[in-house]
Image (spheres, rainbow, N blue to C red):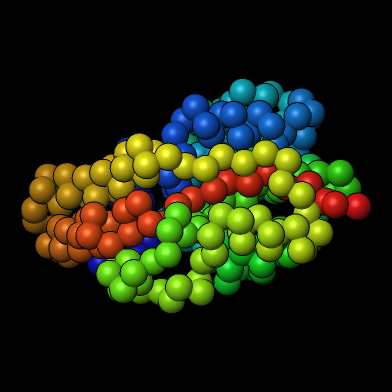
Length: 248
């Protein structure tokens, strides 16, 4: 199944592409973006949900979203127009690593999209290039809640070295010259809600569109993902969203 289509369908009922609920999204944005006239950049913005919510609450704020999926960016553009935000939100269909800013941002977001840069270290360094002096970065990354077993590593198709434990994750950003001024560690309830939505949205789409050429693949992918989650990484892979400021 086309990866971009799969992602859009799977996130239909949970547009935040990370295990973070609405209340905590709001709390994180409130801490990350303080000034009413802030300029915010979201690298790996998906359908633009973080930026759209922020701009809707703060009429003086402007934003830029970058994502590599053309249909995803088009969906973000349509949504911004429907919400009356298009004049304050600029969208680019581009690999996050290739983006070059025309204006440095007061806050840079990259939540659940560190793979676009190749890992946490590269994400911190890449986001920092676009940040104005005194700005903040909001970065969401996976970590090991406990040492992963073979079932977890098979389910995620990764090695144990791909993530660190929570202390190691914080230690890495500190070694790069940043301080964690706030963070949210996703709860098991948030993870479960995210995963049930991911697998359920994809399954429901397949069942209500049985004639679509991708329906069978969607059902198979939803089942595979659900098994990997329930029998592999549930309770082992955590997620932390860190608010960072430079350690000058």
